[in-house]
Image (tube, rainbow, N blue to C red; front, side, top):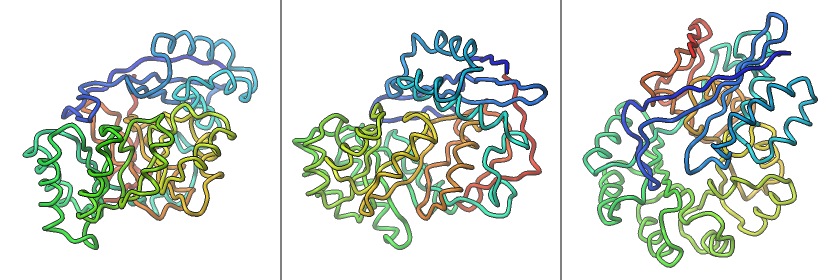
Length: 343
């Protein structure tokens, strides 16, 4: 098998605002595997400031993968334990090169176009008018579940926006999820969560920064809003440490982002150790349509009941044409639409 890679810069149509800053562009590295006439592509998606993959060593590690590609997958993955995005890209490429149809890693009714996956609408941070316009747009597109990034603006202004949404739409009409990206201090967090609970919020992701295990455990116990772990999972690599984290914090939800936690294999480990009291959903991490397609195909095999965070395919002005499309707040795979991948 022959391996190579290329770097690609994606440009946001509209800058994406989070409590960590504003995103204008994002890089991915694409790993190409060729086995006789078959080609598989895997995406290594890196988010600066969030991915733990050492950005200064990405290409040297990809060079190593290319030189060692004929070794066993277990050997390769063991060497990539500190590079979850690269591990996922490799896993994706290996699945793709063995696939019967181009980029169909998990054949199903989803990839045959017979069914779809419910997803949430994503509202980025920005000034209040910008966020209001995003909310109105998503609701007009038929979304019944919105995820709003919060924590960068004055809390009273964000609360007023959320209240205006809830005043207009009941919990049965609209599910509101929040993502704070660790914006709040532990000292202030419970007061904020109590205030937000007046609005019948479904859940809040990562209200405080990761690594504060005791504090997060106390929040999960006392918060009136169910808490979802997100960044907390990054860098937790062994099954032993995964079990310990869940037992120590006892979260109501966890968010699985394969690019940030080591791919499908690692995600399945998390799922396998969850108690019945902890639910999960899957979210893409700013991948292009190549990565998003792979994640979506895998998600369908899990028989998801909750709306998934897979609506990021329209973020970039230079994304690749693909069979993916969104209609009525559901992600569809139209097998008659061709890929157009130019890297």
